[in-house]
Length: 143
Image (cartoon, rainbow, N blue to C red):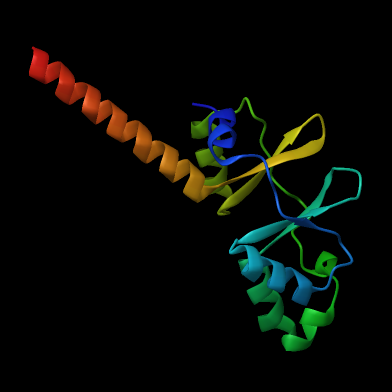
Protein backbone atom coordinates (compact mmCIF):
# COMPACT_ATOMS: atom_id res chain seq x y z
CA UNK A 1 0.00 0.00 0.00
CA UNK A 2 1.07 3.54 -0.71
CA UNK A 3 0.47 7.01 0.71
CA UNK A 4 -1.84 7.67 -2.26
CA UNK A 5 -4.24 5.07 -0.82
CA UNK A 6 -4.61 7.00 2.44
CA UNK A 7 -5.01 10.34 0.67
CA UNK A 8 -7.64 8.77 -1.59
CA UNK A 9 -9.67 7.83 1.50
CA UNK A 10 -9.17 10.89 3.70
CA UNK A 11 -8.61 13.61 1.12
CA UNK A 12 -5.84 16.11 0.64
CA UNK A 13 -7.09 19.03 2.70
CA UNK A 14 -4.48 20.31 5.16
CA UNK A 15 -4.98 23.02 7.77
CA UNK A 16 -2.16 25.53 7.41
CA UNK A 17 -0.98 28.82 8.83
CA UNK A 18 1.74 31.34 8.14
CA UNK A 19 4.93 31.88 10.16
CA UNK A 20 3.68 35.19 11.57
CA UNK A 21 0.54 33.76 13.17
CA UNK A 22 0.76 33.80 16.94
CA UNK A 23 1.08 30.59 18.87
CA UNK A 24 -2.31 31.42 20.41
CA UNK A 25 -3.81 31.53 16.89
CA UNK A 26 -2.25 28.13 16.22
CA UNK A 27 -3.67 26.67 19.45
CA UNK A 28 -7.13 28.02 18.63
CA UNK A 29 -6.94 26.51 15.14
CA UNK A 30 -5.86 23.14 16.56
CA UNK A 31 -8.85 23.21 18.93
CA UNK A 32 -11.29 24.39 16.28
CA UNK A 33 -10.36 21.66 13.82
CA UNK A 34 -9.70 19.00 16.49
CA UNK A 35 -6.27 18.25 15.05
CA UNK A 36 -2.83 17.57 16.51
CA UNK A 37 -0.66 19.72 14.28
CA UNK A 38 -0.69 22.52 11.76
CA UNK A 39 1.58 22.97 8.78
CA UNK A 40 3.29 26.34 8.47
CA UNK A 41 3.55 27.33 4.81
CA UNK A 42 5.95 29.71 3.12
CA UNK A 43 3.29 31.51 1.05
CA UNK A 44 4.30 29.73 -2.16
CA UNK A 45 2.80 26.31 -1.42
CA UNK A 46 5.96 25.05 0.25
CA UNK A 47 6.47 23.98 3.85
CA UNK A 48 8.23 26.34 6.25
CA UNK A 49 7.62 24.16 9.31
CA UNK A 50 5.11 22.30 11.40
CA UNK A 51 3.69 23.00 14.87
CA UNK A 52 2.35 20.11 16.93
CA UNK A 53 0.64 20.03 20.29
CA UNK A 54 3.92 18.73 21.68
CA UNK A 55 5.78 21.79 20.33
CA UNK A 56 3.29 24.11 22.03
CA UNK A 57 3.55 22.32 25.38
CA UNK A 58 7.35 22.45 25.26
CA UNK A 59 7.31 26.17 24.40
CA UNK A 60 4.96 26.98 27.28
CA UNK A 61 6.99 24.85 29.70
CA UNK A 62 10.20 26.63 28.68
CA UNK A 63 8.94 30.21 28.47
CA UNK A 64 5.58 30.45 30.22
CA UNK A 65 2.16 31.39 28.85
CA UNK A 66 3.46 34.69 27.41
CA UNK A 67 5.00 32.64 24.58
CA UNK A 68 1.48 32.30 23.18
CA UNK A 69 1.73 35.87 21.89
CA UNK A 70 4.89 35.06 19.92
CA UNK A 71 4.96 34.02 16.24
CA UNK A 72 4.51 30.34 15.45
CA UNK A 73 7.82 30.44 13.61
CA UNK A 74 9.56 30.63 16.98
CA UNK A 75 8.46 27.17 18.10
CA UNK A 76 7.78 25.33 14.86
CA UNK A 77 9.83 22.36 13.77
CA UNK A 78 11.78 23.61 10.76
CA UNK A 79 13.32 20.37 9.55
CA UNK A 80 10.10 18.67 8.53
CA UNK A 81 10.28 15.06 7.39
CA UNK A 82 7.99 14.65 4.40
CA UNK A 83 6.84 11.86 2.13
CA UNK A 84 5.56 11.43 -1.42
CA UNK A 85 2.32 9.86 -2.65
CA UNK A 86 4.26 6.91 -4.08
CA UNK A 87 5.97 6.08 -0.77
CA UNK A 88 4.91 2.84 0.89
CA UNK A 89 3.11 2.67 4.21
CA UNK A 90 5.99 0.56 5.60
CA UNK A 91 8.42 3.38 4.73
CA UNK A 92 6.18 5.97 6.42
CA UNK A 93 5.81 3.84 9.55
CA UNK A 94 9.57 3.41 9.80
CA UNK A 95 10.22 7.15 9.44
CA UNK A 96 7.57 8.05 12.03
CA UNK A 97 8.85 5.47 14.49
CA UNK A 98 12.49 6.47 14.04
CA UNK A 99 11.78 10.19 14.27
CA UNK A 100 9.18 9.83 17.04
CA UNK A 101 6.58 12.03 15.35
CA UNK A 102 2.93 11.48 14.47
CA UNK A 103 2.33 13.67 11.41
CA UNK A 104 4.01 13.73 8.03
CA UNK A 105 3.24 16.20 5.24
CA UNK A 106 2.94 14.79 1.73
CA UNK A 107 4.77 16.75 -0.96
CA UNK A 108 4.34 16.68 -4.73
CA UNK A 109 6.57 18.79 -6.95
CA UNK A 110 7.77 20.78 -3.96
CA UNK A 111 4.24 21.71 -2.84
CA UNK A 112 2.14 20.54 0.09
CA UNK A 113 -0.26 17.86 -1.18
CA UNK A 114 -1.67 16.29 1.98
CA UNK A 115 -0.91 15.16 5.52
CA UNK A 116 -0.60 11.64 6.90
CA UNK A 117 -1.01 10.88 10.60
CA UNK A 118 -0.03 7.77 12.51
CA UNK A 119 -3.77 7.28 13.07
CA UNK A 120 -4.29 7.11 9.29
CA UNK A 121 -1.55 4.50 9.00
CA UNK A 122 -2.92 2.39 11.86
CA UNK A 123 -6.45 2.56 10.41
CA UNK A 124 -5.19 1.31 7.04
CA UNK A 125 -3.18 -1.48 8.68
CA UNK A 126 -6.22 -2.63 10.69
CA UNK A 127 -8.34 -2.65 7.54
CA UNK A 128 -5.67 -4.71 5.76
CA UNK A 129 -5.50 -7.20 8.64
CA UNK A 130 -9.29 -7.59 8.65
CA UNK A 131 -9.34 -8.17 4.88
CA UNK A 132 -6.60 -10.79 5.18
CA UNK A 133 -8.39 -12.54 8.05
CA UNK A 134 -11.64 -12.53 6.09
CA UNK A 135 -9.92 -13.96 3.01
CA UNK A 136 -8.33 -16.68 5.16
CA UNK A 137 -11.70 -17.57 6.74
CA UNK A 138 -13.28 -17.76 3.29
CA UNK A 139 -10.42 -19.96 2.04
CA UNK A 140 -10.72 -22.33 4.98
CA UNK A 141 -14.51 -22.51 4.65
CA UNK A 142 -14.26 -23.50 0.99
CA UNK A 143 -11.34 -25.91 1.48
